[in-house]
Image (cartoon, rainbow, N blue to C red; front, side, top):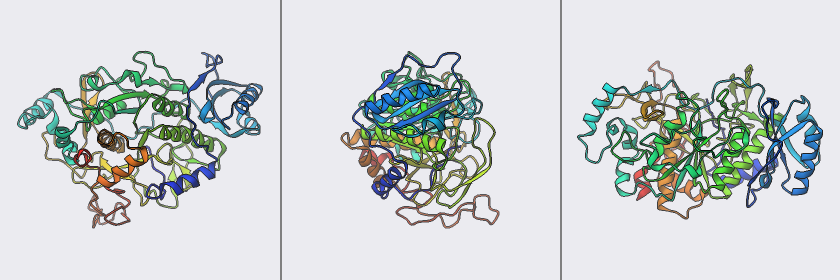
Length: 509
């Protein structure tokens, strides 16, 4: 599950951006990062090891490095010239070590250790589909409320942040698009179709954007994660099913999962950030971590290269006007601690238990500079039992659901989040995966209200409109007499909620 870096940034964004840039040698984003697809793209019998090679951005250096790549037994898949990222396939076991010695190469490393593993999204637990009988009960309750969608009585999350009232004032602008970088989106769903932007959607598996009709859709019905996220953001108020936080904005899909194993590899995420930025996307939602490493430690050359490449793409998107949001993770970890145990990496082969310092080992893209990090809350505006936290780490909080300790008085009495699922269905999920899209929806409302706001200004607005409940007097969720997490900080900003829980109604006012 995705985690967030323990960092003291965003309250002081510039100093940390500079320090991270200095430590990793990141380059400032250039004016354009249009990719140049090579004729040597992957073939059916291409090697199964992929690399990112990060270079200086001048054309002479890139050309020279590409010659060295070929000499070292590498095949260039795609080059993102203006951010200096080259995606390469190679069967040479020494390719990384050899290419790192080449003049102009600033970092290089493998993006995988094996082609086998489960997906790394940040939902917590299996999905629960809404049955026909349950839906009928919810529809009866919803009918009692004016201007309510048929299943809205079960959407406690909208009421918790004032999104139901906000929609009556400003449902969001059609000029604002939120791209769901995820497992794909079923754009044929009747609640998503009215707001879907096909021209800003693609499949980025392998690092090369594919804009063929429908390429952005989930591979199977089990790849429901992205469809659920999209509905939370922008399900239309059209008299069908549910409503999104920003039902008037557009939503796009960028599928970044490997079809053979469902993993989110770095080269795919690099492609997604650049594609979103170059296609006018204002906001991206990232409810996942980049595989195969939960935390990427910069003292390891492969992991350092992953951080470098994705950060270049994320910064490029920010410089082009795109705000990126990401989920904080579901391990109930204090991410401002000095040490965390990671027993899940690498997740595409055999994991090895290791202790990492989250100040030196980064969850990508969640812990990258300028990315808004979101923790999860339940119906009682209390941190969800699973949500990771950390003073100076969490930027804001949003409803992600809590099925154990925060049960709403709704028809289904389900503490999780109800949203769209593939094949015209609806279902409940919980996790920081669900919190981040709620925050992305509020960001879209803010962008609709303040169309000239930059990503940094949008981030400041999100913090300013948030409601902070402050640290709870006690956080003994299971009642065993032991605190299940420790909140550090004050009423203005703290480790559970950052600057507070997002408020959609304030966003449109």
